[in-house]
Length: 344
Image 1 (cartoon, helix red, strand yellow):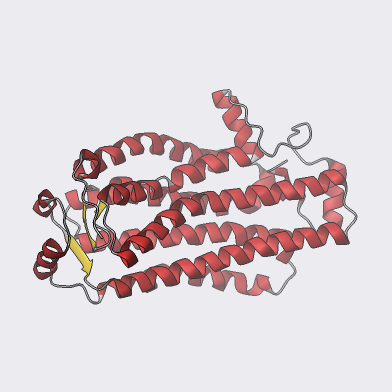
Image 2 (tube, one colour; image 1 turned 180 degrees about the vertical axis):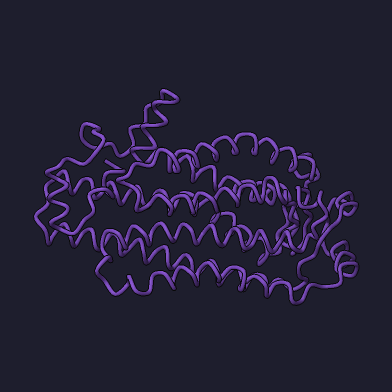
């Protein structure tokens, strides 16, 4: 099924201009996020500082990979497209653009899993057997993307033949063929299988860590005599973690669902293709804004610099640290007070 719409929105020129405009907004916010993590993270949050920085780095790299390095123009449902970014300008073959994008997006997901795992470990697993396997678990996850997606490049078709087939099977604007097109595969099953495995594994892990956080917080609330304010702070912590993880996750997951829909049903709509990947390119921007809003020290810095007032998950009178009485209460229950401090 084809929906041919030759309008400016569906052209490569529109895509390039939009990514350039997005970059102008994204880069300053990305740099602000990096500065805040590096120089405004209090000592009380040192256990999560570098975890946040790692997630921020990969989120930003994903945005820059799309908006600056590759500037993709995909012809879904065909496994084909063109690249109009910096890598093309300096002569890097398009097949490597695809591999870089796949690895970066998967590693960005891994970094979000790292945040959830870090919170779970700090709050509940410090004296659990998990502490012995968590490092190998994370290392394997960072090795998984480059090993998984390398299989996509074993059966790259002859480009001239594949492009001729593309001309016959899809109603594409003829001007597109004046660009350097790249066809990753003529059979979508291998590509879709790799993406399905990656997406399924990572989604299941997100859900497992989220469930473990909820279950352990509920269990701790029932089994220990914590004050009402402390329990409220725990709920706020859970909200902050879930929002920080799932907001950027959804911005990638929804376009991936469209990719699967387009490929399986053989549906072509270039406007939706363009919008789909522009949404993915907002991943790092959304992740940075959410991080600055939900964590108290970062929120206070932004309030000071930009005179803004955020009232998300605000509890109590806005003091800079956890009340000493609550800190003692948390310590008796093996909960690091510092980790609730960020969402107080």
